[in-house]
Length: 290
Image 1: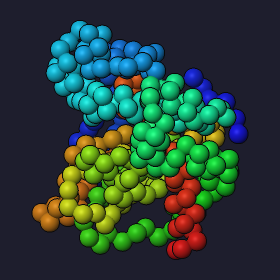
Image 2 (image 1 turned 90 degrees about the vertical axis):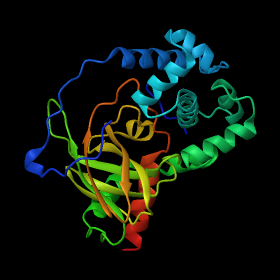
Image 3 (image 1 turned 135 degrees about the vertical axis):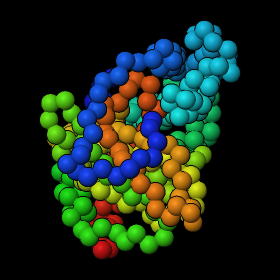
């Protein structure tokens, strides 16, 4: 295998398809620019031992102030973001080369193969070796056909607590045509272990549930019909959206959100689970067991 790799909003009211909101470009704030600068520094020094103190010196803020800004801009604390960035780099290295896993681990700043393997598997959802095997079997044509078949089935029932919504695509030049992997992750849990997930047509509705009571972050990652295998597997360039702190409880058994796929920003947190591979598994399972 050798794949050539290229080097916030809150819960809202459901909108009907005729009322698709129009995304307007925003000028980055000084805090967003600061976070982007720190992220760029992380990327260029990823194999080094990076502390919050060192990163705060780069930003020109105190460690406490940097962490507060970073969490507000990305949804993640600074050092947790760094861990995801390292795992993303390791994932792409595993996808794009046949290098030994221990070499990849050292190159992204891990000093122990054991700790790297555990962290990788926890955040990605499979080990580096299992990921390579899954990618070797990945057929993007069959995958797209499976997504279409899955989305053509009757929607799941809304029994129990759930999050419902609509996911839209936006492009300045053309309407988005494709699918979104939508997931609800409980606070503190990695995206590789969602409480619920589904595949939705874009534009179109989705339903996540049943869910236990709690607060969730809802993520959407878009795959257009024109997406190629490299972009689908590396994910960094794919449109996305995220809604923070969505609560479901006996008081609010069904929460409603709107997701608008947008071009990723430089400061966006890495999405490390390989959703093309994971959604292929889910679609195949649903097709076989309607």
